[in-house]
Length: 398
Image (cartoon, rainbow, N blue to C red):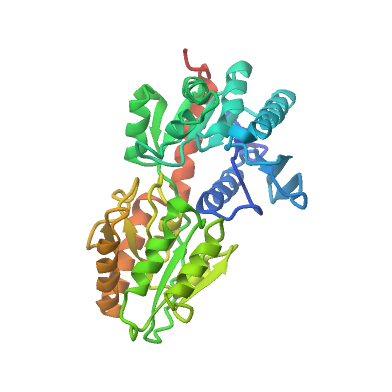
C-alpha cells in the first residue's frame, strides 16, 4: 500500500531551503551548474527545494520556477560576500534572508548553504534561532582559500562572523580531504563533518570526436584571478607554431578583457577562442580531447568532474580534491599549481600522445567518476544526512 506515492509508514522527504551566494543567470560557474543539477535531482526524489539567492541586476527575475524548484532572489547593490565598503548590501542580505526564513519557517525542515562565506552568516544564525538544522558545504580548501579563513580576513568583524558560522552550523559537507582537514583545524568536531563528494551525471551515450587531426584543448569556468587562466594561455602559446592544436575558453568574468588582450599580444587569435558564458558545455566537451585547469584553489572542481564524465583527458593543477579524482599518468596529468614550466611540459606531452592514448586516458577518467562520483549516489548520501539531521536535535552546542 502507498500513500501520496510513498509506501505506508515511510518518512516524507525533507523540505530543503538552499542559500546561495550567486546563481543563474547572473553567474555561470561550475558551482552554479552543480547546484542546479543537485537541486533538480533532489526534487525528483520528492524533496521540496527552494533556492534563496541575490540578484544584482534589475532585469533578473525576483521569483522563478525551474521545474519543481522555486528560485527566490533578493535585490542587492553588491554581492553579499563582499562586506567592507559594501557592508550595507551584506546587512540588507542578512535582513532579507532572516526575514524569509522566519516567515516561512513551517514550510521547510532544513537549511543547506552552498559555500561557507559571508553570505552564510544569517542562514546559520536563523537556523539556530528557529531550531532548524543547517548544513554548510564549503567551496574551497587550503590554508588561504578555505571559506572560513576568507571570512576571518574581512576587516569589519571578520573573526566574529567566521566564528559564528562555525559555531552555528549543524553539519558540514566536505567534498575533499583537504576541506575536511581545514574543518578539523577550525576545531569542528569530526562527527559534524560528513565526507560527501560532488556528483556528476554520467552520460549514457558516447560521442565520437571529429578526428580531424587538430587536438582540441578546452578550459571552462569563471574568468577570475584565482582560476589563473592567463597561465593556460601563456603555456598554450608556447606550443610550436605549426602544432595542430586549438584552445577554447568557456566562461565569462572580470578577467576576460585582460585574457583576450593577452591572447592578442601572443598572436594566438587563430588558435584561441573565447566563447563567453555557455549554458550547456556538452557540445564543446564532446569535441574536446584535453581539459586544462590552472586553478589555484578548489573544493572539488565541478568542471573537472564534468569533463571527466565526457571522457576528456584532464591536465590540471594539483589542488584540493584533484588527487581524489585524477591518478597521474592513468586518468590524467597533474602539475603543481602556479608552475607554468610544469604546465607547459604537460601540454607538450598531451599534444605528443597518439589520439588513441589520449582517448584511453579519457576513458579511464570517465570510469573513475562513474565508480565514485555519480550524481544519484551523491544525492542519496545527502538524503540520508538530511533525514538523520531532521530526526535529531538540530542545533550544535556552543
